[in-house]
Length: 157
Length: 188
Image 1 (spheres, rainbow over the protein chains, first blue to last red):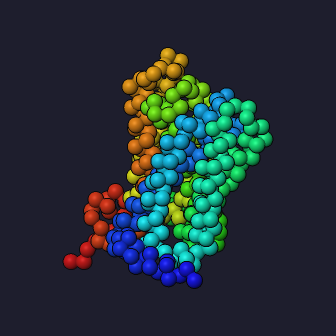
Image 2: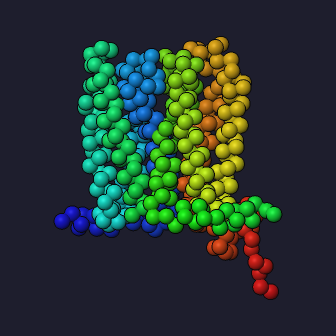
Image 3: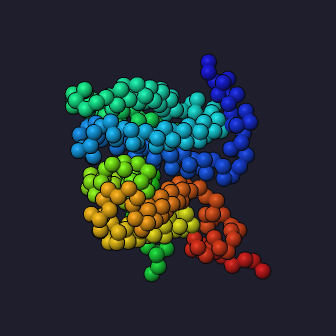
């Protein structure tokens, strides 16, 4: 049902930009990976703190506030490199199970990060029980790990 | 006996062949290698940002390093183990890859940067733990670290591409020399 949209993506100018070049796909992919490193750090430092690990003597809200610009910045890099990568092989993605795991997981991860996780990390200390904080950290880690693993797996299909 | 001979010998060992031909194992090892970037490189970047006064400025550098460095080291260990396994699976082509060779050189430089930081300005961290502006040497180490590790990621990713593979000739003599290609003499 959705296949025509994916075909349109691949035949659009953006979809043709990358395949017409020998270097473009690997370079955009490498930038996507650089973004992965930064988003990984920005997510992990807060999630580990929620789990009572890492910088555990510091308030959760401080960690979240400091990591926030790098989380958003790297998310922008990830999306602006990820979209052209997708357009260049939209039809392959359509037939890839990993792609259909990654996208819902990504939507959930973003939604969770900017709603529940944001409320919990921004609250004053003591507002949420440590167990609630741990649950939020664990769910965030699981969602983002799923996005990362499924993303890597698109390349193998 | 040369390194190329050693790589060829390694390629003939049962473990190397098994990993190379495995349906899932190689893929899993590679995925772990890539995703551990988040842990290792992500935390390395955060530490560099702290040294550059760009993030976590209220956390003393010593506390940041005490709490975060063990995770970075753990990530690095996973990187090295999975990276060695990936080399073990495809030794000859990797040994003859110009990107792999660049990556090794830059890994050595990044290691040197870590060594210089921790034996130099990093060893005197008590003097500037909460300084509003971290010392120039610390900031220099952070910039060097960001640049070197970014290039290492890019070179690592490029190993997968065959632009400069030895079996695709002609290559420029620069590529052939740096990648160590054994090129048969041109026909007269």
